[in-house]
Amino acid sequence: MPDALIVGAGPVGSYIAQKLAGLGYEVEVFEDHKVIGEPVQCSGIIGRECFERFDMPQNIVLTESKSAKFFSPTDRCLKLATDGVQAYIIDRKALDEAMAQRARDAGATYHLSTKVIDISMGDDGVQVTTSNGSNLELHYAKVVIIASGFGSKLPYSLGLGRVSYYIAGAQMEVDITGVDEVELYFSQRIAPGFFGWLIPTGGGKGLAGLFARSRPRQHLSKMIGNLRSKGKITTEGKITAGGVPLKPLARTYAERVLVVGDAAGQVKPTTGGGVYYGLLCADIAVDTLHQSFISNDFSKKTMSSYQKAWRKRLGRELKMGYLARRLYAKMNDRQIETLFKIAESKGIAHILMESKNMRFDWHGGLLLESLKQIGPWRYFFSRHKS
View (cartoon, rainbow, N blue to C red):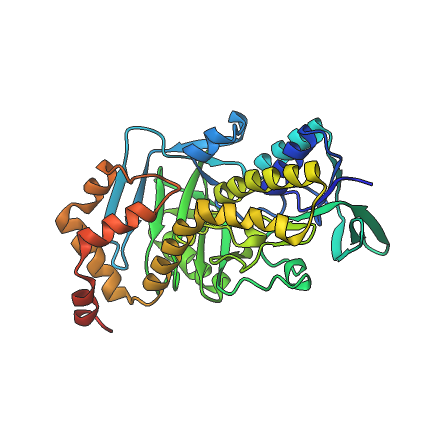
């Protein structure tokens, strides 16, 4: 009987598989899709801190990012730029493949085109039911790790609830002209509740996408038309769409079960990025599981130490990001435009770039500093209602 079964072969699932296999445990990974890394539903921006901490391969890098342009509803532009690399634009499919190969090299076994449809507890282990089309199979292990991304029904079936707040996203590959740095678009008309992006990936190619509270495909089509009219996009491809959680599950553990990554809602609410936070929580999950294997104790109480640890690490960031996201969602375009005007007049972009709080993946300190620079917010909302 394997020691651990992992649901999902994304970066988080494969990283856990690699670490557990490297510790000598027998690990099997189940992936719903027939090809690892497809379909691509990620902008592919990885912060330098994440890239270096988890030793990601250099050959997945498409281009580096030292700056970004932020556009208001009326195309007022603020630019943030640094001397050093802040982030890497990567080939996301290549990242998934590379991390899966590392797990295989460590001894993990992969089952592709295999969907986990049920998880149930036994006295001495956990039973997983899988489907590969017409056939159902039963698998047994000591523990199960759910890392199957947002939208999985497995946590709910185990009584762990559902993610209560999420955003819908859409993206497509495009041919671009005259765009050589990341561009972000803030307008409730373009991307209600969130923002849009145009990301150069090299060779005249790029990714155009957005998050929105609803109908992301329709909003993206309008944004694409706007970018085309400005000469930034010449041709476009197929739209891919998906959801991103912006608030974590209330409980990410059960007896013999841990939930990690997007499936657990361990995602930055400010940007929708989940790779770094998911990998940080994956490390915590591996530590929890290793201790459980040593003590042969997989009780709910023992597994709860995982949630305590990851909330201690990320809880403040997730809470502040969530509050900031909800605040932004209530704003109208006039208020957003006013924010840009204030930021421009006070030189806030320069202040933030010089701040010790300027970190690509950690936004709590930056949010607090921004609020202090922009305020008073009570006056702002009283004077700029729609």
